[in-house]
Length: 245
Image (spheres, rainbow, N blue to C red):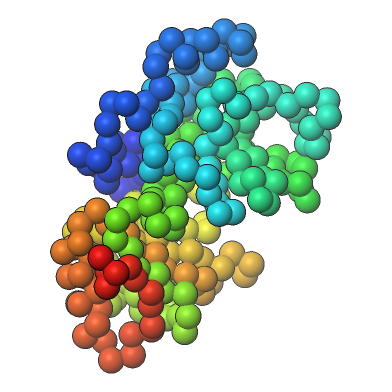
């Protein structure tokens, strides 16, 4: 299925609270300062998840949403060649920014573009703002130890098909399609466990992995999946916080 806000909220479940959103008055004030309304999808995102502790924490060299008050339009000193963008996402450590073309702001679900300090020309990141926001939110939940129970495979890696076979992941049933043009992540959800594969995108058409992240609000679900995987005699080593809790 395609990544969307409903799916992201489903993963958060009862742990999402109304207080995790930004008040309507604050959103209107930001729109007034910008001089135009935000796209519907971005507006709804800030209204529902703009203060979510699961989404808006600082990241370790990962994509993260800018706080609403920091969303901006570049001035003449900004490093990109084209400055007609509304910037709302970043990877601070790598100086990467994601934005929406000013001319696309009237669209309900506009495409998202990406630029980097070492590549100042904008490139398409995702054709759907909603899929971008939901997909990046799921990656943050999976890789940043934000859920109570987690496990990480990052040594002696299997291939992507090996892990999918061991976990019995069925693509139509369990995969959440982020829709990114970069194809750096594969996201799955099975039995309340979020599974995020980080792919090596330095080589095209490869299933080589950099890491595999498992995260869940449910201890039993995490234990059950790891126990099932443990039946493989050559399962790669992994780290988990289950034994510490």
